[in-house]
Length: 262
Ligand SMILES: C[S@@+](CC[C@H](N)C(=O)[O-])C[C@H]1O[C@@H](n2cnc3c(N)ncnc32)[C@H](O)[C@@H]1O
Image 1: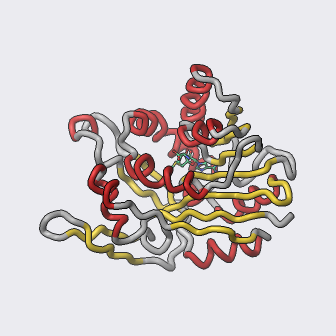
Image 2: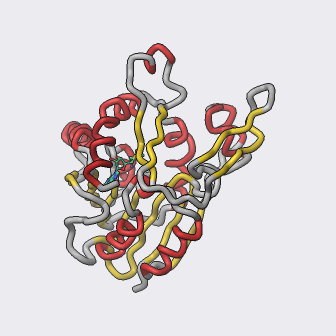
């Protein structure tokens, strides 16, 4: 699948996604994945960064609020429109523009850091996106990204729950099949049923890679691995937001920070 086909799917998701995410229904992101991403993020105050696959810009705004100058790209115009509207209402100096992660229209060595929140496994040929991130980083700059955990969320996966609905494990399969845009259909589970009934579910093309492919790609591109994080909800968070309780048994996200050698 190529980037324009992927863009069509994301453009189809963008309006509903923005509405539901902004209403607080992207609970894994808000309660766990984003806080953990920022917990391991180095100090970015005064740095210039690019956020790749920024969506409606929620995480881009959090980066900018830490004192960094942010440029952000996405391939879905509706996401960019919502992100720009937020920027117009509450300016943080973020420059949003259309951009394909696999062919960034950005100069070499332009950025101190790059981020990609839950976007690289959605990009056709994530290997190219990693090479592009490397190219646009200054020597010494870092890339930090989050993805679905390739070991525990491969093409076949199912949450295992006991009779009380408490998650105790995860069934996984088809791990070695690296996919080229297999469509996954889902929505944010916590949105009210009556609301979901009025909305089309998301259709997300996935580009699954094995863990070894991710790590070897990063190393072969020239990056040096600096930090790996498998977010796990603490007890208090799991009580407050039961949706994320399953991450106490098995991680479903993987966060990696790599650095371009100085
Ligand atoms: C799961 S969403 C994550 C959005 C946002 N980063 C967040 O954390 O809320 C994945 C994003 O990747 C974008 N995307 C997919 N393929 C892309 C590509 N080739 N170039 C840039 N963005 C892409 C989608 O449009 C979508 O906004």
